[in-house]
Image (cartoon, rainbow, N blue to C red; front, side):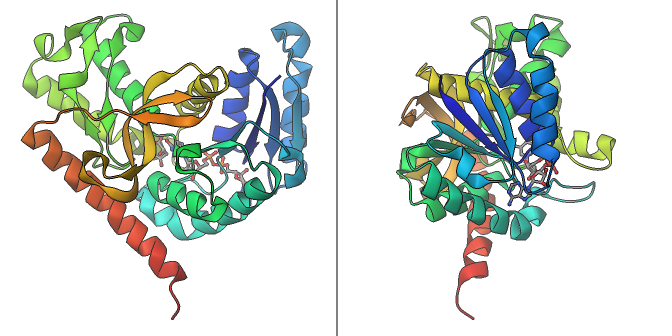
Length: 312
Ligand SMILES: NC(=O)c1ccc[n+]([C@@H]2O[C@H](COP(=O)([O-])OP(=O)(O)OC[C@H]3O[C@@H](n4cnc5c(N)ncnc54)[C@H](O)[C@@H]3O)[C@@H](O)[C@H]2O)c1
Ligand SMILES: O=C(O)C[C@H](O)C(=O)O
């Protein structure tokens, strides 16, 4: 049985456990700094095993050593935002948490593929890559799967069609500058641009961009976790089953789309080795301009990250 470890047994971490266990994908280890929390959640899940036919084991622990030899490690440790906050406002606290987790991952799970979830996503992915020293393709961020499923849902709701029939692509950083791409979005093969007019489509794009924020303002404290947990499980499945799925992933770029030395959401082929290939889509001038703006927002975040660690 493959082994998946989830650092952070909060809302996203524990929800990802649910989806992974429901599909019997892997043995799961949940690590958290809060004493008793991961143990209680693991036990609670195991109590459901007879009814839900779980064949996987679930361990809750405060000891990073238990992630030993994991195939995949998911990093969800960190604080979520509150209404009025931008994801970048979480950087200082979450970078420190991510660095500690990354050191433990490098020590105990040196062969793992790492999926970063903590925000600001594309910046924390960079910090995790630096701290683990892992091969570039073995560290990635989860964002595009979530942003695309939101776009898919909003389109399906508008058209009253089966949500699974909508396939969408969202590129860029995981912030309000993300770039949903209607030209690469289809309803069972039909371009969405044939089915929804430009004005209505623009409204759905805006709602996708601010989809996380909409939930933050409704919840009042904390952020989304059901769809994020399901997005994590989809990526875990693609990796451990070596599915070679094409999904938007925050991947380290070395010149793709014209960007260097940064994580950004791009379509990628996901398999047992991590990000096995980055697919470069032809973009119109308007799409590229929007992606440039999104990349700039991420780059500014990475510059801030560097300033935290520069001497003086
Ligand atoms: N990438 C995305 O699309 C996406 C989606 C949703 C949430 N997020 C981000 O994920 C993060 C977690 O969100 P959440 O709703 O689960 O928050 P949460 O507060 O419910 O859970 C976070 C957990 O991390 C734990 N933690 C803190 N420091 C730790 C450490 N050093 N080691 C292990 N565990 C530690 C906390 O005790 C807590 O249980 C936030 O930063 C949030 O912004 C990202
Ligand atoms: O919006 C947030 O802060 C959490 C997450 O990034 C999301 O998109 O739901």
